[in-house]
Image (cartoon, rainbow, N blue to C red):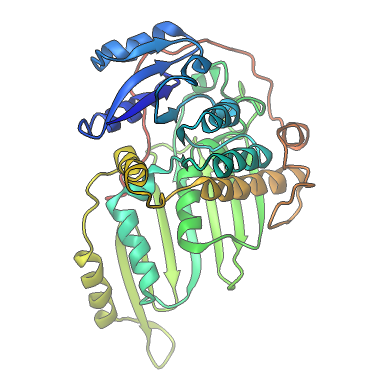
Length: 385
């Protein structure tokens, strides 16, 4: 029985707690820590975790008999907490984004290598049936080479969303919607396409004058094999519609699932390629459903890795690659320059201090509230249409 601790008792911690409770024969939550001790105790009471103890300082857990921790704190704290637990011999699962800078990512990955423990970064959208099936269809080659990829990471957040004390600032949240919302879909794009070679981006703050950070960004990408891509990240889109679309030379597929294949008539105009559509559809329908979706799927993956020694699907290097692309968007949008990859350690956007000094500050944060009421949150589309 693996012993688990939750660090940070905010809204996203409920997704972790609910997921761990899906596996009562494999793990047990023994501690919850939060700088507001009453919030930690509230989660224990809410989920009737009778054997769990509330802690105010996570460092009190470093010497305890704990196997795995979920880090659910604000992004600027991820690196220090993760490194402390890895050095203490604990496996670590950290919420997105992995950290506030590539320098911190490198420190976390080094701690994982030195300790021999697992470091996994939350990207729960990979553990959804439409996403897993889409990945398999792309890998099959039936679509031909990908020529265009489109990511629409549309979310909506009210003006008061950025009133929470750590949100809306470059030093604590680390960025806006590109980093903290589109991160899910950017991770999926990299999983399916690999890293682009260059990009050009724009960003703005159209609706949240209580935040330094962006509430919308648009990036244009070029991949090494010649494909082009576009990413729109937003918290100003009503309806929160989210999708990934891949156009191959032979066919188009997407999540939510949609399929279209065309052949050319003698005059160059399209006609439906029914045979190819049927072949791709049969493959898609033959693929299995994901047993555990979202956070439960990723936690199952990490538990299995601890139990068997198998690799995790999403490790620290994967989390770093996602942050690198996001920081490339910030660099291009802030400087007006085209950005090429990789971003090296001498880049102005490699450190947290460099990001704070060079990223565009749209507004000054005027309001700071300690906590919100424990209301419902949205964590992304199921991508099932």
